[in-house]
Amino acid sequence: MTYSLQQVNALSLDEFVKVFGPLYEHSPWVAEQAAAARPFASFAQLLGTMQAQVNRAHVDQQLTLIRAHPELQGKTALAQLTANSQHEQKSAGLDQCTPHELMQFNALNQAYRDKFDFPFVIAVRGLTRSDILTSLITRLGNDHAVEFNTCLIEIAKIAKLRLIALTR
Image 1 (cartoon, rainbow, N blue to C red):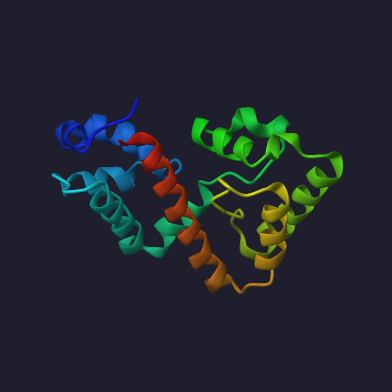
Image 2: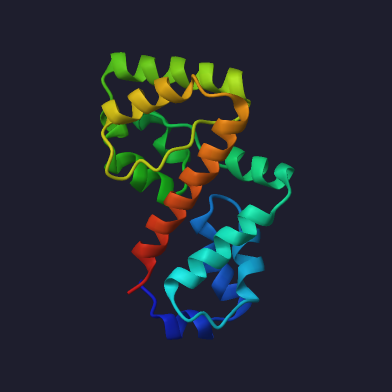
């Protein structure tokens, strides 16, 4: 189902959180906090309000948000993902990894998690498996602060793409 701005502004708090909570993986608090700013004049304002909640959150809450995102995985693990993450990872062909690619993803995901203590987060829509692997390798060279902020930027991209899919 897609929603008009008028419908969004008319949703109860529970309905709003049910619809927009999934924009930020397993983090309905973002939608709960943003709901108080209704009525929104545009979807850009809605997204900006939600992202402002993330930006204002304590670093521990931001870390929890990053950690709520799944690692990029092959088709055997897709069933464990949220519907949004399943769709996004399939759109990037991650369900069609060759055994060699799967081995690369597993090794790089582990190296990334060992270095940063959170999963590699990237907005995969529109990317290929090769693009994602290249980004993962490149981002392993970042320091913790840069990578933490990069993950938050990627989460904002994911939320925007998910919002676009929900609205008209």
